[in-house]
Image (cartoon, rainbow, N blue to C red; front, side, top):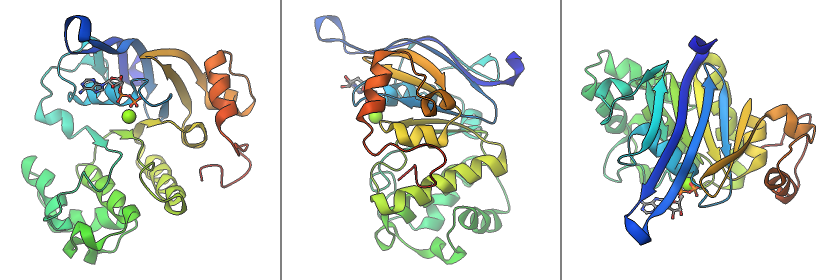
Amino acid sequence: MTDDIALELRALDVTFGDGAASVRAVNSVSFQVRRGTSFGLIGESGSGKSTVLRAVAGLSGTYGGTILLDGTEIPMPRPKSFFSRVQMVFQDPYGSLHPRKMVRAVLLEPLQIHGIGNRDRRIAETLRAVGLTPDFAYRYPHQLSGGQRQRVAIARCLVLEPELLLLDEPTSALDVSVQAGVLNLLDSLRRERGLTYVLVSHDLRVVAHMCDRIAVMTEGRVVEQLDADAIYEDRCAHPYTRTLLHASRGYRRKDTPDAAE
Ligand SMILES: Nc1ncnc2c1ncn2[C@@H]1O[C@H](COP(=O)(O)OP(=O)(O)O)[C@@H](O)[C@H]1O
Ligand SMILES: [Mg+2]
């Protein structure tokens, strides 16, 4: 079954700084993400979730342990070809889009870097796929709402037709009223395109709604891995997971449609 594994982390360690001032942000984290599934990483602020994603993307500098894509260790620094297969969506759609770049330029850039043709058609199709009309290509970020900006950030990833998306709290910076729309978009994109996700959130309701399997992190370590069903059925074992569960106020079961709000 190992050929079914899109991404695997073996004993990932990330340390910032040296000596007495060093911080071990990620401590021996291992997990496997099956192709076509959505894997959730949950834990409180500072538990090391973003550092795990950044290490996979090759953005965290050196790390210990092994990261494998389709069973093959990914070289450091990440080669250009890696980014046509793996893309990352960041938390803050305000910081991640250049204020002076029109949406068209934002989507054109990865196509140019990777030498991909049919650019205008691809841009129009990708905008449509994220729920925006093709005329959004001629807008600047300040002419977009937060939800629209995050849709553009998602389009920037999708335009390269990757297999795996690393999503770092993709809706936490957005108004609650637009969060569910963006999460539902991500969910249907994954199903339609057979994508694999690693989704980071501090909100158990978001990962329970979006993910098949979930790893619970605290203080740089994964303390429990479980199927989303186990959360709905209240079968989580680790006391920390139970604390998270009870802290999700207003937590609702899967059969209520607005569980992601
Ligand atoms: N570039 C960095 N330099 C130093 N420490 C960092 C850096 N990035 C993260 N950290 C530290 O690593 C730990 C984990 O951070 P992070 O991965 O951002 O957590 P999370 O995403 O779960 O909130 C925190 O203690 C944070 O302060
Ligand atoms: Mg984070």
